[in-house]
Every structure is written in C-alpha cells, then in structure tokens.
Length: 159
Length: 444
Image 1: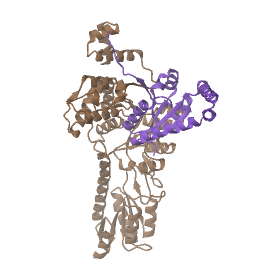
Image 2: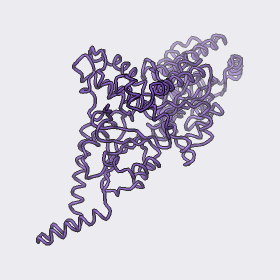
Image 3: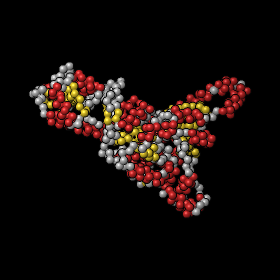
Image 4: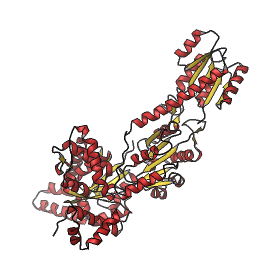
C-alpha cells in the first residue's frame, strides 16, 4: 500500500536519540512511514583520519587492527549496529521504518530519495541543520517542506 | 443515472406490451425471448431489474434467477409465474427473487412493482453512502480566528450555491478533509451522499475498482458485479484526497467522468451516466507535477475551477490558542478529566512551535496532554519533550515570506513573550509604540 513518508536526515556519528525521537514522534502523529538516512561525513578528512589511526596501530604492532580499519570492517559492523538500534527503536513504537546508513553527505543523495519516494516532509537532525550550506541547498531544491531542529528553544531575554 | 430493465419473456405479444409499458414510464428497457440470451446480456451489461417468465426455451426462469443472483447480485429480479402456480412463486422467492407476479397480470401492477424496486434501490444506495459517511467524523466545527482562515471560510461561503469542482491545497494536517465536508454540507447537495476516497491508499487496480466498480470476471477475484463510488455518490459529492497520487490511466478516466459525466465499470461495455460534484485535495504542488509530466494539465484545469489554499498552522498563530481550547474541550470528557485551560508557559510553548503536522498535530499534542496532566491546567510537563528541547522550524521551499510578514511575526512573538506589554515590546524592538500598534493591526 503506497503511503507517505517522513524522511529523516542525520549524520551517523551524531547523537541519534534526539533527532530520531522527534522523527518517530512526527511519524506517529501523522501516521506516516519513517525513512531514516544516516550520512557519513566522508571526504578527505575522514580518509586521512582512518589512515593515521591505521598507522598508529601498525606502529604499535597491532597489524590486525590496522588492517581492519583500512578494510572498513569496523565501519560496516558499526553501521549494522546503528541500523539495528534504529530499527528496534522504531519497531518498539510500532513505526514502519527503513534505515539507510553510510551514504555520502551530499544534497544529491537526499534529492534522489525525494524524487523516488513519496516523501511528505524532510526532517533534518540538529547537526545537519547546523550545516548551513547543506540546509541552504536543500531548502532551495526540495519539493517538500524542510523541518529543521536546533538545540534550545526560542527565548527572548528582555534587557 | 437511467434505470435499466431487462425483460425475458418468450411470448412476443406479452414481451412487446411489457416493453412498451415500461418505456412509457421512461425506463431504459431491453427484451429477449429466452433465458440463455438474457443471461448473456446481464453478463455483458448492467441492468437494475430483470423481469423473467418461468417457462422459457433454452434456460428457464428459475435457473436464470439463480445464475443472475450469482453474477450480478445487485440486479433485482421479478419472476412471472404461471396462473395459480403457488409452488413456483415460492420456489422463485426461495431462490432470491425480489418479487413475483402471477399470470395473467395487470401492466399497471407490474409498473408499480418496478417503481417500488427503483425506490428501494435508491434507498439502498443512499444507505451505503450514509454508512460510509457515518464512518467519518460526525461533527463539523471549524475554529478560525486568524484573518487567513476567515478568508478561507469566506470563500467557501461565497461558493456555497455553486456546483463547481474545488481543489483544496495545503500541507498535511491543515484540515482539507474537514473543509471538504463543510463545502458539501453547505451546498445544495447537502442532503445527498458525501463520499471520500484517499487516492494514496490503494494500488492502481484496486483504486479503479473502488472508483468505477467492476463487472463479474473483470479480473481475478471479481466474483460478482460491484458498484463503484462514482455510482454510489450519484447526485452527491465525491471527495478525492491526495489526487496527485492518481496514475496517468486513472487521471484520464477521471477527466472523462468530469467532462462527460459518464464512465465504464472495470470490464464493462456500457457507459454509466452520473451526476457527481468533485472535490479534490493535495499537499503536492500540482503545477510542478504537471511540469514533471506526472499530472495531466487538462485534469488540473478541470479540478482547479476554484482553488482554496489552506495555510499551515505556523502561519496563522492566532488560531493556536482557540484551537487548543477547542481540542481540550473535545478530549477532556473522554478521559474523565476536568482541565480548565492551559498555563501561561504551556501556551507560550504551543505558540512558539512550528507544527509540521499542522492542526492534526496540535490536536494530538492536546489529547496527549489531557491524558498525562494531573493538575487542573495543562502545564509544560505534559507537553512533548521535543517541543521544549528544540527549536523546530518548517521551511517551505519556493515560498518566500515578505520581510514585513517576518517583522510582524517577530514583533508579535516579542509582545506575547512580554505578556502583552506593548510599550516594553516597542522599546526592545527599537520602534515607536504607534509603529508597533500599526504593525500588529495590519495582521488583524
């Protein structure tokens, strides 16, 4: 049965609970499916960081660990653990969800989902909201409303 | 919709008399001299009533009756029995005949029976429509304090005598379904059926069958003939929600119904004429869908005779408080709670939230708070955690707000935050009290 979805976009290494909890709340509230995309920050910085870690382990004669880091074995185990965690959390609340992990953090990736799936709302995690360049591009090109989450409520402090 | 009668009678003179008497009553009538042909005609076409003699060549009336009730249960059957043959009348009624007429009969009596069946059928159709309607919300209350919602209601009031197709647009949860009911129940069709269908909840084949009905054997599983919502909604209103989800094939069929007021059941060969008013709704941008090739331009123009845009709740903040009180009054009795209202802090949180799920979400928030609250007023503790921890904003692509509107919203928030102290608000905003007053008055 075709049904509309809430598309939640976050980073896989950010605190999952805050954003996912709100995504689940919205999903329950609107009676819509939840699609979770957890992006990898990727890029040269991450590759360099992996390489440096591998070198450190290799120098300490922990060659197996260094190999695992370079082969991204740890990476895929971690991804599977995150996926299970999110799926279980959603199942516990009776929410039908699909989780995608490890996609590159680009607007094109998100736009592809928007084109292919029946997305009602796009919800951005607090850290994706903070990434102003991605937010700007998304709001410009998304065909659906974009919801942002920023830590802290709107308050006015009279002087 | 013409009422169709099939007469199966082997005696030519009797058949001719029957046909001519029924034609005089403006029925759409066809006749045949044997049972087998009659069965073939019902298999390929749709008839409201079959009048059949018992004794006929190739297939007798009782066998025909049994087969018709199997393939087309909605066809009413009147059996003409032989003189004094009580047994055959009893057999006919046992086999599902709706009425019988012993020979020799008076033509007026037969016409009377057909008239009665027509009335019963109309009542049955209204019953189905009523049952469908009763499955939906029973009360229609629209809370509108904001200027933008008052404008929406004003448009609805101005078109209440019209029969025009209306396209309701707006985000999920803004109240499109509710307003569709308001449009129907304030129209001249208010006494007639109001049916609604969400186009996103069915696959294409199922949706076609729901909308247009089907003939027996039209597809695997079509065990009997079925009326579609188009037929049931005849003389009333059919509300199609999430219209953008219609497949290109169904869009073409819908366009034909709107333009020509007729359609074919799935697997049917005879056009069925209906008089239905269409209301449609979508949360999608149909113009973009047309540009992308997924929605027909001609259908869009047919549906969009009148477009009513329902603004999201975040753009009509004035409605938040009255709506919250309305939902509080609606849900408190159900949970046996005597909650009088909202604390100032709770209202502040509710006003500051951006409601991606719109009015539907506000109702859920209030209902949840009613369940959780232990004090006589709703406090922030019974509101969802996310509303307190995060600043949620909804950004609508392609919709640029004028700076004036943003200034006004900000000024209003500051005034609210200061408990209505406009002098202090004006001082903080760095404008005169008169400018602030003018700014807020424009919103009224």
